[in-house]
Amino acid sequence: MNWPRQEWERLMVANAPPWAVLLVPVILAGFAFAAAAADGILTARAAGGRLTGAVAAAPLAEVARLLTGQRRVTPAEDRVLWRSGLIAVPVAAALAAVVIPFGSVTVSRMSVGVVWFNAMEVLTWAAVWVAGWGANGTLSLVGGYRFVAQGLAYQLPLMLALICAAAGAQSLNVAQVVTAQAHVWFAVWMPAAFAVYLAAVYAFSFLGPFSYPAGRDLAGGVMAELSGPDRLMLQAGRWLLLTAGAGMAVPLFLGGGAGPLLPAWVWSAVKTLAVLAVLVWARRRLPTIRADRYAELAWVVLIPLTIVQALVVSLVVLTRGGVQL
Amino acid sequence: MIVALFWVLAVLAAASGFLVFRLASMARVTIALLVSFLAAGGLVILLGLAYLGVVVILMMVIEMIIMAVFMIAYMMQPAGLGSMAMSMSHNQRSAAAISAAAFVLLGAGALLAPWPHRAGPAPGNPTFQLGKTIMGPQMLTMIILGLVLLAAMVGAVVLALNRGRYDRFGDDLKQRPPADPARGGIGR
Image 1: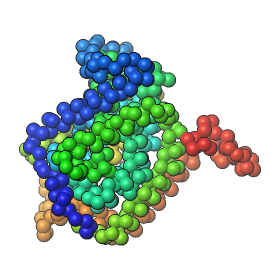
Image 2: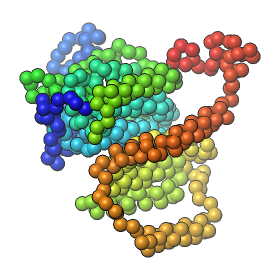
Image 3: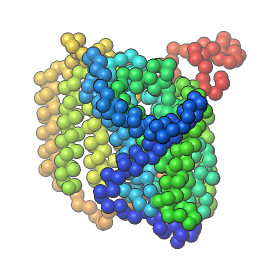
Image 4: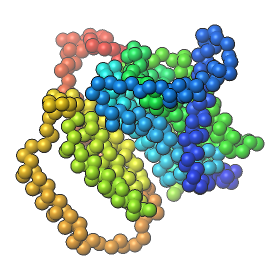
């Protein structure tokens, strides 16, 4: 690569102190609250209600309500699996977020950050399926299976989209993916990969058009048997996953913390909020798609599309500088 | 720290691997096996092979969940509830003897074998080295493996389907759109 790097040196991510890992869930939750509040405001506006402080603070009130609520008990539940699956969803979101650079700081600058994010997001396969299984309820079980079916559809296009970003940077390190976008954001010259990635963010947080595993036609599906803190785990986990996905879109496709005048962390926050705003707004405009229909679209259209995208990226990288390590 | 982490992961891998044979519920068995694989992936990361370790975690989650779907589909009592619980082990005495003998043999081999010492320094970036090997000298192997695996998958799907192209497109293969029980996602 022969792109100038001086301007981007400050983005070469600094090692954060070890205690910063505790800040990851806090910051992630802050963004998730903002997204949930915006979603509540949009809902209130669509219903013609007045916008009050209470509407904006509704997610906080909901957390308090669920924390103090009673747990539902079902006959012959698999309590160990049920509870661990529910807890694993928000934990997976927080673990995925440790490789996301926030401005010039990252908690973990591991060399394979892109793959790590993918692996932690995949933990939701096990977590959501087990959460559906553990309740010993039909609707809940069907919801868990729906997530697996949806996973088979969204996962391969997502992996190929991540490969595009990594190939463009010739690195699996998230900081180097940011550095490689010195001139042009990956979103500009990898639009297909970016779009597929955003769709996958909905899919692994099973929100918006991919809310099929928790669909209303199943009386809540995987959420059907949940109340109190159990419901909080899965509901919060979905929004945390959405936030982690939006946060990762920034270093992968939107140039990370790069931007004029303002410090890098402000740009990271602004871009994350912008991606979240698009996701929250668009989720109300898109119909829920059945997993079997999306599977055909994914395998017949999106996988070839992202493979061609990866080919284009590889050819551009080869002609612009060749492999240089 | 590294040593402590090694022992935690090693004990976790062995203990959850043992649980696979003790639990009756297919879901629990799958998750126990998954935990064992995740701990093994952690051990691979401890060896300094971050890429391989994370890929083990990524792949094993997907594989175990798909396996769970099939195990539950095939088992008569997948939840392992009550007196109907199925035993997952048969011929227990000789199985225990064979397992113990295999363990002693492998353990003795690991302890007694004269392990070679590393010649030269460790490679700087093991992920890059791995990619160079796969895409370089082992390219032909990977291409053949890929084709064989693809052929196996296509063959398995064809064998498993109860509907063929004559069911979908009619006797003269001219029927459009195909007669499918559910329409696909791209308007066919």
